[in-house]
Image 1 (cartoon, helix red, strand yellow):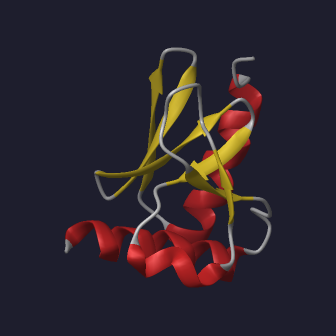
Image 2: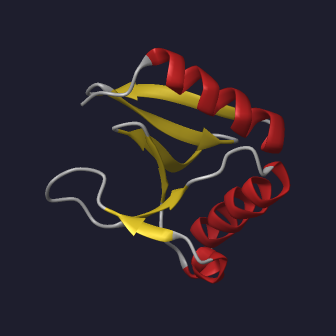
Length: 98
């Protein structure tokens, strides 16, 4: 089931309010998420999933599979927790830059 544009807009608004500089690109019915141009996750079937890196393993996030055959990713369940969301996104991007 593809993610609706309304939900995508909600996610981007929440992430951008928490982190700033969030962009989103469509990809095969779903959406990829970027922070300052760095790909950190996506929206898959109405779920916000982010890459698993060493720097975000301590947040206790649930693992999910974005689509059949893909590697697991962590799911951000509560986008309303702006401070936590910001910490998670920054931790991911820090880990990706190493």
